[in-house]
Structures are given as C-alpha cells and as structure tokens.
Length: 508
Image (cartoon, rainbow, N blue to C red):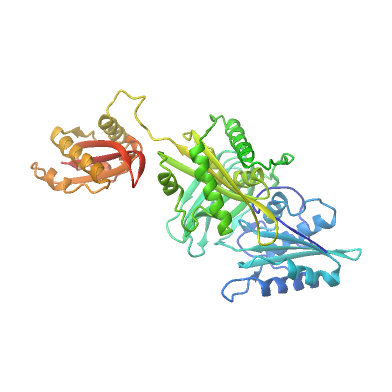
C-alpha cells in the first residue's frame, strides 16, 4: 500500500478528460455522477472522517470527475499524477471551482483499500469531497479530493468566444466578504475585473483575446484576503492546459540561498513583463521570515495569524517606511514550488508585477505537516517606498496643491483657489497632529467658518505621498472654491516611518 499527498494545491497543467461522463461546459451546477462501488466506499469513509462541527462533507460530482482523471493517470504510470498542475487541469475539465483542494493518492489491493484510505485521512476541515478509482491487475488506484469550499458560483461558462463579456456572480461563505476578481490573460498580464461589497457579488469579466484565462475570486476573511475560487476559461477553443513547467531544481538546505533563488525567480518574471527588478532588502526579509515561521507554527497559510497583524502592521513594528505594501504567502514542498503556486494565482502575480515596487523581502520556514510530509512556508513582501519629495523642487504643501488641482481638472471641475488664511490654519493643524501622533484636526472646520465662510469641510491623512490627498469626496464637491493645505512630515510610533500628516480644508 502506498499513499501520496499533494502538498501544493494550486496550479495549472495537461491531459484529456478521463472517466465515463463528460461534464457540461458551465461552472456552478454540480454534475450528477454515479460513483463506482469502490468510489462510493471511499466517499463514505471520507465523509465519516472529515467535516466540521458535526456536519459531514457533501459528495461532489465535479470532484469525483476530477479525481477519476487523476486516478487514471496514476494507473497509467504517470510519475506525479497529483501534482498541482495535473490537479488544476483536472478540476477545470470537471468544472470544479475549488481554490485549493487537498489531493491524496492511495495505491493498494482492492480488499485493503478501505484501511489504506482511512489511514490517509488527516485533514479535518472539509465541505466537499470527491473520490475517483481505477482497478487493474489486482491493484486499485484511488484519488481523494478534499475541499473546504468558500463560494457558491452561479452558472459561468468555461468556453467562450473572443470578445465575450461574461458576468461572474455568486455568494461567499461566511465570514468571507468583499470579493475581488482578478484575471490572468493569455499574455500573462493581470487585470482586476472588479469588486463586490458584501457576501454576494456580480462582476463583469472581459475575454478580449483567444487563449486560456485564469479567473480568481479573492475575498476578505478573518485571516486577511484569501483565494475563494479559481476557474479556467478557454476563449476561442484554446486548451485549458498551462504551458509545460520547467524541470524542478534541487533546493539548497541553506534557507538564505533558497530565499535568494525565489528572489531571482521574482525578477525573472518581472523581466518577462518589461519591469525593473526589485532589490533585496534585509529588513524586509527578516519580517517575511518571521511571518513564515508564524504560519508554520499555526499550521496554515494566511496573511494574518494570531499575534501577527497584517503586513502593514508588521512593517510598522519593524520600523520600515513604505507607501504601499504587497504580500504573497504560499506553501509547497520547496520554496521555489511555493513561489510557483503564488505566481499561478492572478492576485498574487499582480502583487509582484506592481511597477512601483522597488524592494522585496523573501522569507521561508520549513516544517512537517500532520500528514508527515515536509513543507516550506513562504512569505514574499514587496514595497513601494514613501515619496520623500527628493526629486521635486516643490514644497510638500505645494505638491499636495498640485495633486488637488490636477484631480479637479481631471474631473472637469472649476479650479480651486489657494487661500493663505486657510493655509495657515491647515499648517497649524498638521503640525499639531504630528506632535500628538494622531489624526484629529481639532476644530479646524470651525476655525475656517470663523473666517466668515458659509460652509467648510476638512480632510486629514497620514500619508506616504502628496497624491494620497485626492482620496476625498470633498474634492469633488462643486460648492467648494477655496482650499488651504498644511503638511508636516516625520516618523510615527503609530503609523510608521516617513509619514506625512496632511490637513486640507475646503470652503466656499
């Protein structure tokens, strides 16, 4: 008896569909599948062992079809039948939208299969399971797919014509909310298709060119953003398979060397997209390494684990100044494999393809899973540095005004008039906020009204660049014609290094 498990659970790959039933070309509806006796026995065992709070997992027809394809590969002698590439392709052909199902392969004599399956089940949280089996020459190859589904998708076509505009809709499982949809196009470029507000979402997705598109739903949960669903869409009859992956390289036992190899892979991807490389930053690597160690200790991949806070909080604790931060987390058998898992996710690929990021920290932690398999937890942190104004001849106040003027012109609104009296009030407010290390403008609006103005509105920001001040509904209000701007710069215990306290007051 042999048991194999897939450690990395997200990816792309190849093969024609296996099994005796062709699934329809629409994600969402669960295909009706009649399990074989051996598959039914495997499903019964899995459903009895897995689940949460007494709720037994459902038997998923889509996962059964995908598992059958993988079992057929194993029986045919595929040396790695449940690799993440094989798994992702089988899921797409079976019309399963699961983001990261665990895959377990059991090879045993048919009369020993039940005991082998029972011993292989180590994952305790699952909402849906599928089992596929092939019996041949006195042996049985059984694949179990175990999924904790995060979303229910409405019908969504897997096969579309170039130029199609389709609506991806569905409902997230609690506590997830605020879905965002990312798409990796055939060119390798990533676009964000749109976002939803609550648990339900309805987001149009464009398929402008022929080829394979990877569509991903990311939502906010208790542990930060997480991938809720992944679907492959073939436009113009394109195959669903990913290009063949490069042969795996042996990984150094030295963590720093393995981390450097990941950074090399990051910059190779950026070069392919005509982007400048990111530089290694030791202080970011230390922060990334600590988060990987925290994930390994918690036994899960997440942007927030107990005691860690989000990426911004970790940077502030580490005294790192930044304007924007992007973070990728993943787990696989090796550091490079974990990075490949991240790149195959449109949202994670988007993070490392941000043009403005210039510095990166890569950190890994090695651990052993409950199944006994070894794994590498990976954290990648990318930052856009704060705008210190060194390349500008304008003062910080003037740069904020310039940004406000430019945004008003873009909106087609009348220009604002700079008011010296309002400027003086705003400068005092910004200095006071910096001194108190807070964002309370402390009566700035009332002081502006005391200048014999009819209406006044105030914006305050702790920002990393003057352009952040345009994030305001007040700037779009046609009633306001005068503005005062004040900026105070410095380091903050609450908000991090290299911050700008900006006060903007608008009046008629």
